[in-house]
Length: 295
Image: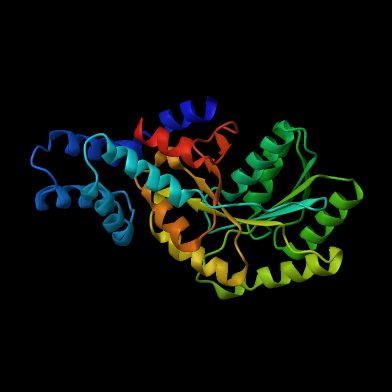
């Protein structure tokens, strides 16, 4: 299974910092669930940025389990947290996917990777380079588009992002595209004027097609750990998030942060990025993710 093999290979930092340490501690423990064992496992969980509440939850599962059931029960509960029901249906074309997030999370690259993934599924996809604050973002997406023969609509640096999205949607609608992938400007969640731009974007989509985005994915850099939860909460206040794209998992020892983020936000992880290559990008599968984490 390609995803399982690739995720197993790429999760080595989080696995070494988390699941391998837990297995080692459990294997050498012969005195049951002592206070010392609890402290050791708690330290492991917290170092992986699982957070205090879920650390207590997982510790309770370990305490109440025995033998081979310990890891099985732990993995089952982890899958349960990540397995958010997602029965969203797309009733019209183009499906509009808005990508949001702070600078440096891999948002522009993720836009290209989603488009490429969907293209391989024989979908007609249009990219919208609506990050007009950063010239490098427009150029970067253009390079990806040329390299992998992806269609793109772009604006100029300093231009009106909402106008680019307007033109992109009109083009996608008239040319019968299946998907419109919109790369918005990376913004600090603390910058209210940039966050307010989402209100304008929603108005433009409402006016041009009487629509709201079908999906709003926040790009989450796993190396930031639990700070990602703060980001997600603020973004969700301005524009309703429908999913998470987890990036840079291959370079993170803090991959445990995804558990408290999903648990508290109650939104699913939709895709996961595990490398710089355009092929290092997959739809997220909770069971295979946990299996790879504990392999």
